[in-house]
Amino acid sequence: MGRSLRAWLSLVRIGNASMIALAVVVGYVSGGGRDLSTLAIAALTAFLIGAGGNVVNDYFDRFIDAVNKPWRPIPSGIVSPATAHRASIGFMVTGVLLSILLPWPCPIVAFIASVLLYEYSRWIKKTGVLGNLVIAGLSGLNILYGGLASPNPWPSIIPSLYAFLLILGREVYKGIEDVEGDRRYGVNTIAVVLGVKTAYIIGTILLLLVIGISPIPYLLYGYNEFYIVLAVLGVDVPVLYSILIVGRDYGNAFKATRILKVPLLTGLLAFLLGVF
Image (cartoon, rainbow, N blue to C red; front, side, top):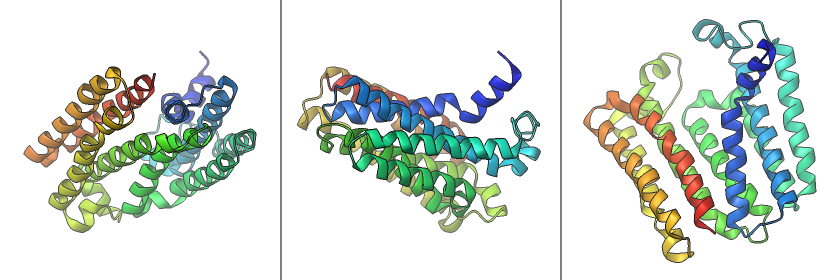
């Protein structure tokens, strides 16, 4: 694999963009969608918009990365800032244009998501709490976007809420992890503004809500046994473990935020496999 190709795969964050596409698949399938062409377009548009958001994030972080991560594609000189910026816009515009092939609400959602991703990288993430809400909101919106492309969008609300709460709880814990650096650079996270203990309480409430809603699809929407097994073992257990280790020592927030990456994937798989 060539150096340039590796750099672009790194910029796009292929794994992250694929997770975004998977979230759209979950929303579409949960809403009864079975048309493969619609599914492919919805997933592709989300992948492109997510990829554009990842690239533009590196573009705006290029000066910070020059100090902290000089090996990244832009500060290392493999990809020029202007090229990365143009590519990010190209990815997002292509995604929005393709979304016109989907049911009418989808292009609006695609456009809003693109604008939010760009503005998040440009300035919103520096605000702390607002940045956390935007990231969590976009995570839930991925699933809802798939639901809007399906015959019945309403069932996508529960997995969308799950994603929102899980990501927001993780972001609050991440604020505990980064509290010293955020305070130094004026990033107003909950941990900086209200203190680490309050941030832990708020993050824990959000994560407990994730556990609280996990039985709902099985009890009320007829999801199968695959769902409940994955939801309990792949979501509830790691979430509860994360809560406990941070409560024992706030210094474990770094470990907890890494553990909380697990239920991001297993939760999506639970909703995807549980509907059949």
